[in-house]
Length: 422
Ligand SMILES: Nc1nc2c(ncn2[C@@H]2O[C@H](COP(=O)(O)OP(=O)(O)OP(=O)(O)O)[C@@H](O)[C@H]2O)c(=O)[nH]1
Ligand SMILES: [Mg+2]
Image (cartoon, rainbow, N blue to C red; front, side, top):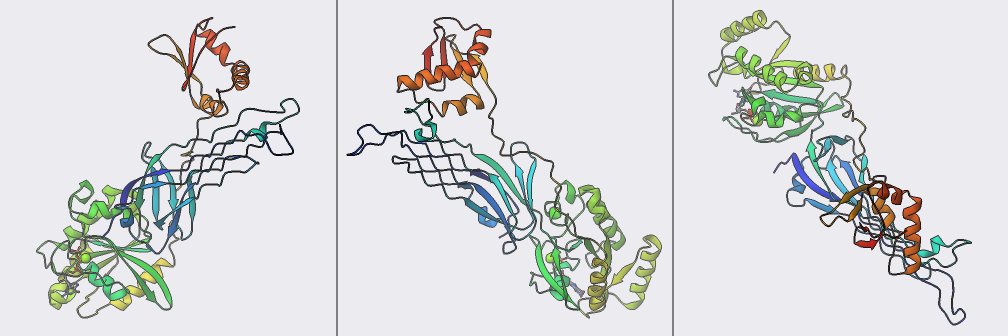
């Protein structure tokens, strides 16, 4: 089975919480803070591999959640970091942020990696906060909580050469003749249901050929299967455009040629500019005289170089291979997609939002608040004092006052609710 576009859910691991603990043993009745650091959460990493050529493995496996970091503990023990998840995808997979539809990565080459989401940072233990003025901090920091995201994986196969043409033009037959591939071949349209890749060897050199399922008129508007698969020709350097010169399906071969080009153009101007070798196929099915007549017509109406082949008699197949190699050597490889810089894993660390709820309470939210609240344990009067000081220092009290905060007002931060007094 073939699958070349799939939406998956990814989430990096949360950071583990730092620990609040004090050394207690036979020698020390009241020792210093010894709460260890929380471990970092695991990251989500994509890796390109040449050993896959479809996204089929994602058909049922659509959610990837990396391990959380462990909490820190007493005696300065740090929590273990969560394991990263490495998601293997076929080379040529483009990763798109499902929310903004922006491309975030193009995994082009075997082994190439992309860290999509970094694991949440572990929280500091209370030992971290010890200082000359604060000998016994009674608070620690909770780990950073990560959010899950949706991404679309889209495979844009990387091949050197793409075979295009009407259904039944003989594309798969040619692929089987010039490469190691064994595609299904039959005398009915749409035999090939998904792109096949084959490696072709000529004079000790190799190139990769992709057989693209039959295109028909209107393909770019979603007719047939062709349009759906055109993304697999986007990255080829050279197109072999097969045209059934015998007209065995009863159409006009010059019309066929024009229709396919029109479809390529409708899909993208770029694709229409990709160099082509025009291949007049199935030449054995008509007699010499008719063939010559059609060749003359082609020269007159299209006036571009072409190769006449037959896979039944092997006519010009070797020549076509040589010509393909020769042309390829002059065309540079296509580069990975240039990606507009965009921080997919951006974390809101600065925003502060103040709203009022139904009861008139001031509700504080935003990334800066979330981050701040990670270091607050309110079960303790000392940390509550610290919390109030920090609110003052961060300018949040002033911001609240501007919005009408006065003595006795209720302030809500996450699940903390308190009454404000000067
Ligand atoms: N006589 C003759 N028949 C050919 C030649 N090339 C292909 N055929 C036949 O044409 C039919 C279609 O060939 P395929 O290679 O399956 O065509 P395709 O372009 O891959 O078609 P789709 O996969 O449907 O898009 C098959 O019956 C082939 O045996 C040829 O050079 N001469
Ligand atoms: Mg085929």
